[in-house]
Image (cartoon, rainbow, N blue to C red; front, side, top):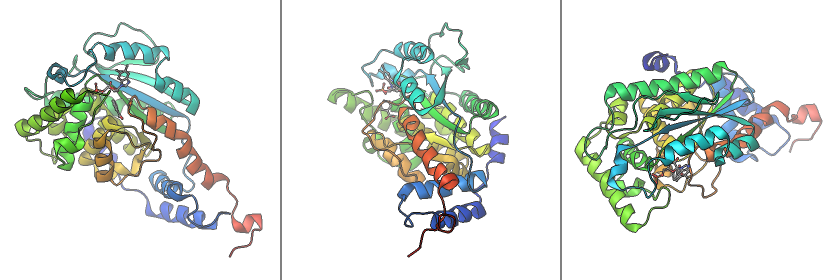
Length: 351
Ligand SMILES: Cc1cc2ncn([C@H]3O[C@H](COP(=O)(O)O)[C@@H](O)[C@H]3O)c2cc1C
Ligand SMILES: O=C(O)c1cccnc1
């Protein structure tokens, strides 16, 4: 599927299914509104699936998109770049936090090399080699990607979403791995929302004060240099994005085109969600915000998209961890519409 055919397949939520879910919620054996955000979520997912109740969101799959970043050269993170490839090996072996959380939540993990700098010499069924280029260029000096490279990365994400749905996934979860990738994430969020660099730049893996100041300056200078146009999402991704950010944007678009919910993780996924929404505003109907990352840009992005995060646990890891943790909550919200008796069927008196 190309970007264009995917965008053409994205349509608004179905108001009739949403009305049916709202009506059913009002008849279930609980005070109206007592399930808070879960009621709104169940209504949104009915609209997405065009059916009430919508399907349960399992089996579920996490795709962790990995890439490296030329902007690493600016000293925006204390971690060496080779940690990206080393963590890819860790994901493949099942030893990272996202693997533990996925096991706990009942989700599979697929690792997608979309732009790791050094070749990842592994042959494993849960690793997809879809490397577009071996890391981005330094966005502080030049566009991170060409438009063609950005498009190719978006189309990797689309392909992965389609393959997982074809394989039976009823819910998708997007994760990231890429040392230095909170810098392009912050720049993308500023570009799409118009927020100031300082309002969207966070401490990532935990940078110290001088590194943080450098990071804010890099984001501000990149915005001034590239003047990214939010009406041209491919241009924005190319100028100041990353390969995993672009692939995640495609992954979100692919989920929306297939009308399958996709749980958005932290600041990298949230920056990709802004790009996806700029390509196709209706794609937001497929997005569920898994959690509120500590990174300030994540909250700016979610507010811009009108999404309310389900969990707020002070997480600042990425990998898809906060999104996988939210999967049982999403499943519970849907299960209410499947399992809970109505006042009528259970013989419970109404007020
Ligand atoms: C061991 C390790 C595991 C990680 N898992 C996710 N990240 C997260 O931190 C990185 C971004 O932060 P920054 O922009 O500050 O470099 C990304 O790789 C992200 O996925 C990790 C980072 C490290 C070091
Ligand atoms: O919360 C996140 O998404 C995050 C925070 C730090 C590093 N990487 C990701």
